[in-house]
Length: 124
Image 1 (cartoon, rainbow, N blue to C red):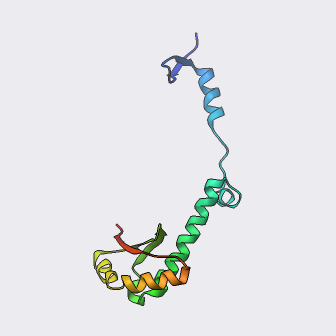
Image 2: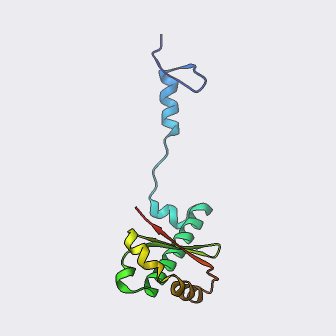
Image 3: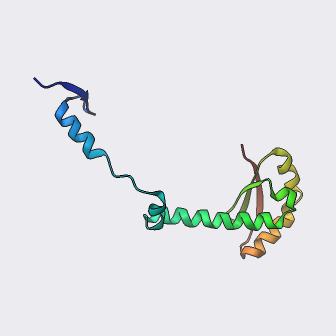
């Protein structure tokens, strides 16, 4: 008599031999993340492009701000004409609010994009 191991989705008991074969077939060879991003799927390629675009926007935002304030800017991105800037604390968000109009104009002209509003987020 075979040893009973587990139950599948339909609540039928699988013999130990079949369970081992299923477990072996489900495992895949691991791949290096660098290789996946280099020649991966279209989803990974679009994700990589979005990350690079956001990194460029972040650099533009940091260069447009005073040095002390730029140190606390953690993220930046543009979506549907709205520039979203993430800062490390509420104090820095308050100080950044004084720079929003200047920032909107500078980033809009630097990236040739219409920036209608600036949204400031405090990141945890």
